Length: 311
Length: 300
View 1 (tube, rainbow over the protein chains, first blue to last red):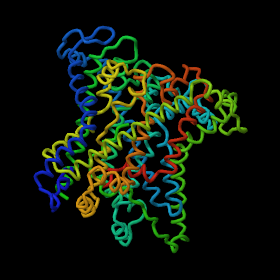
View 2: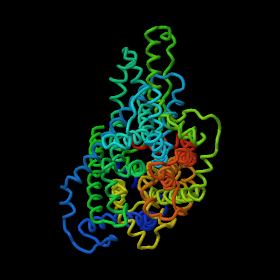
View 3: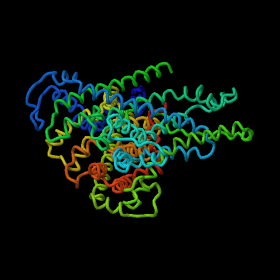
View 4: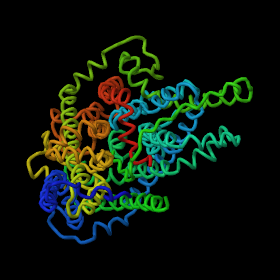
């Protein structure tokens, strides 16, 4: 991590009294930081504390905490119901991160072989990036719709079997994964393409002189050189997958029979989906989500820190 | 979508120079075969990626009955605006456009302002605890929004701001990602220019506004485009803090076009097509800013 080594540069030589300037500078610095700090305090730090408080309290039907329940919300998480939520979250994460990263990598490697129109093609691959979660999901509602599904129409024309995209418990989660991968593929392509652009040209040339082309060049040179970007993409995609909500809300509402209820969707259901709110249970799950995301970020931090030290 | 890139984006937006054409290889039949395979594989990826982009517009312009058949048509027979007008009638689209624009616009301007001020403090001002405060700023990026939405909802509700524009934007007026990116950019600002301006007696705010901001336009645009797209696309928060159709953003309006199992596909596609136009324009014409903003951190 790059901390503020250069941020606190030595004071510029000048005619002003350094002490007075520094006092004034510090006051000004805090004044400049205040807007950000106020927002973070009100909408980030305080909520975190309150989430912990809420997670240890039961509440009445409109969500007001009315009794201390200790860790019982967390103890309830041993239930098969919640284990299923965690399993679904894990499957959704794997089902979006793996195809998303592998697909983006395949695309940028293939694009490397394109001589003319490379930028144009990359732009084309990045287009889904313009679609919001809601617009992408709404399109896939039409694609998956049980009555006259566009995708089933395509399969029908190709002489293939129909797929119960959102109506089957076994298929619904993968259908949501497909939508998510489609939405996020463009971002992966942009990240990895930027990474390829930063590989020194001499390395590619040296490899070419050694006779490495095509698949060998990709396997032995490009992919290893893309290590940092691939790692970054995996971590960011994992964090995004853990936070996915809109596509589940629009496509399946967590169903059928809870088969697409991930952690974030489960938080939403407990806190906001019905007229009764269980903020206590939802807060306990929010803390689990926080913990998982923190672990992912810590892994990212750890690896990058090591890299920087050895660099 | 919360991206939490934590590495230093010192150099971003690198371009890939097109590999030098190697004419002498063109005739080699094995090479030709390789090229054919390459384009075939690219097409295998490109068709599913572009099909939904195509179909959202094609379907929006089809006659509703062309979509109601099975298998649904893939090519429109002509331009029919029935679905588009139906979508415009079904929900107050223009009002929702306005809400989204207002929300994303206010958040973008506010984040640019709060981030620029904070980044300025970290780069140009000396104060005790600078490193610690910066580390705390970075730490805020690790907290997923979904983990704070319940208390934030309760806060907004207790202030009576549910179903108001203010309630939509308040929690997002500052975000450390912008501070982080602008700090990187400000650090590369020539120190001599800063010293010269200060020696001339220029105040910090004036220096920030008249010299630093104009010279940091690329970084500010990158942050601005990123923030605009992410807030334009927000879903969870607008869903829980709005009640009335008049206050809903476009994204929530899209969901309300869906009416159970028997949703009208033309209506949904027309709604999606209308909603995606601004961001599609940004992706088509502002891609370099997007690349810089979104991949910052990915490239060393």
